[in-house]
Length: 119
Image (cartoon, rainbow, N blue to C red; front, side, top):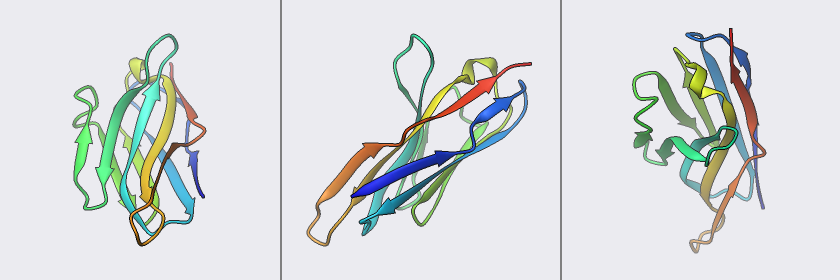
């Protein structure tokens, strides 16, 4: 029904910048919310940033002021500035999407993209 495909991960130096992108495709009527989560080795998956269809955003305290989430149609981007070593993780896109006119929804994850912060 819906697919999420992430891109933009890679290697970045501490203090550098990286931009992640996630495109949703399939049976999409509207977006309830989309977000980015991350999971570092040995740790639980955690929320990084979420944006609602009306543009309301939420950020983890650890990234406030440095990361920015934005949405354009069915694409959600995460601009990561001044990245820190602890940002190393697999970043996953998540979405809650309306797939028909009677309120049916799809909720799921992308395949993940690796972000490595290293000098």
